[in-house]
Amino acid sequence: VSQSRYRLIERIIGKSSNPGDVVLDPFMGSGTTAVACIRQQREFIGYEIDPFYYNVATQRIGEAYGTVEEASARRDSAA
Image 1 (cartoon, rainbow, N blue to C red):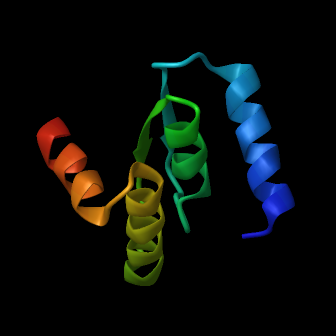
Image 2 (cartoon, one colour; image 1 turned 90 degrees about the vertical axis):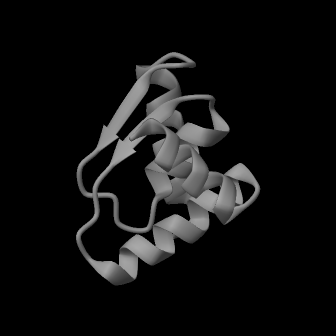
């Protein structure tokens, strides 16, 4: 993901939501929207059916939270 695409997504989220809001990304891909949400204190719901992109997104989300285990724990506690 290019840095400019991330910045665009980050700006859109920042302008269209407030901290604590939930952002839906039904076509999650590599998790750019989720990472932008985490960094801006937004919650997110994302769907990805492709196993490759699911794994990429899981890794990126884990890195944004600090660890993959922490991301998995948050996911499991929300279920």
